[in-house]
Image 1 (tube, rainbow, N blue to C red):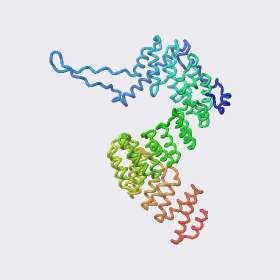
Image 2 (tube, rainbow, N blue to C red):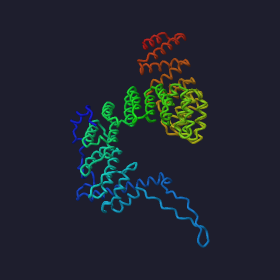
Image 3 (cartoon, rainbow, N blue to C red):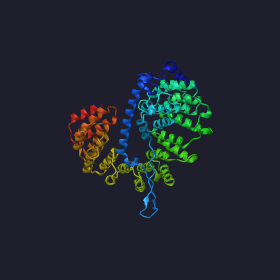
Image 4 (cartoon, rainbow, N blue to C red):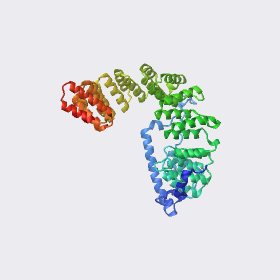
Length: 554
């Protein structure tokens, strides 16, 4: 696969020698197995001490935080009858299997670097490098003997571990060292393709793969599509032979189009992939289109894509499909598609076995105004998360059932479920609909004192709405003045709406001035101001202030 034309200039400026950043220290000092004999013993001793300390700390933390999990599971021992009578004795439990970190600690204690080379040492170190989270790769490499050099699988594992670390540039430096002793294979480059931090570095890596002949490998060509921008990824995709344009390649390019907000190109690729047998649409392809349309604000297109998926019957929807389409059904009010998805989830067992599907069904019913169906799903759900409680409380708030939402919040606390910031946002909305001022004050104060949750500007907005609906305009104004952050237009708009409902003209002038300062382009604020001025004129207000207010709006 040739290098795209847009990248040839960058490759001429970058060149193959600048692909690997020059280390701040010589590579012989960075990577222990290639040190000189004068400093090798001291470096190995320091590495063994550091690694032994880190392993001891890790083991101590594991014993403290997860002692029950790490305790070896013994099989139920059978009672053995004694040969000459007496009480039956239990068979000794089998010894627990050795753990990788314990094996490494044993190797460190017995001076791994001084022992003769053994394939078991390499297998142990490679196993540790491929574990998650990976241990420090450079410290493990320093423990290996200098001769012979580490094998290619071990160095590939080290490259992978360094690519997943917080400093992936060490992986590129290790690659330059690896090429001195071995010819890299495709497993060497796969972890590096997703960690290139810049387009010049990615293009240089691409050129190296082209020069070494690795672009013919299907996995390499697929991995190159993901990190490139859409323009370059499309050029690579067009240059691929048709036999390599599989479903994964199409899905990768569709994802790039959706990220670039090019829904038309994504739909063209989605329709094109069905023409070839090797690139048949999978459930992932359908989920990508439904999710991408919903996230780009095209909920109607997402529901239409779901209905087409059901109508054509190529693949069956899974939990990802339902979680993507149910919110779109709720936002568009498409009750028919939402109820079909609900019934499908019930028949396939996804409703009972997958909690996020049940949460999506509840949210859809609440947004469509069917609180009873949402409550039925909530009561029959055996595995409830905090999201389940939040969805139901927010559904009560959305449909004006404030008392039921407050009762459900109290039941949530009785069940021992810890609320989060979204929970308080939903229950404060229920308090505003129910007019429960005292309960709202207590819940707002308990956020920080009992649960350690700092109120956000949305929570202050709910409190202003709560006070405003109850006619407590002065308290609402005081709450705004005591906010730790600057009030936004939504806060002042809620106060202004409350002033219009309860004839609070004095505070309304303050709120209106703040709104005009924050949103001078919003003509609706001027309309509200003129309406307030008209009300004051009818009520016998001062004419001079009316004219000044109208002039300010103009």
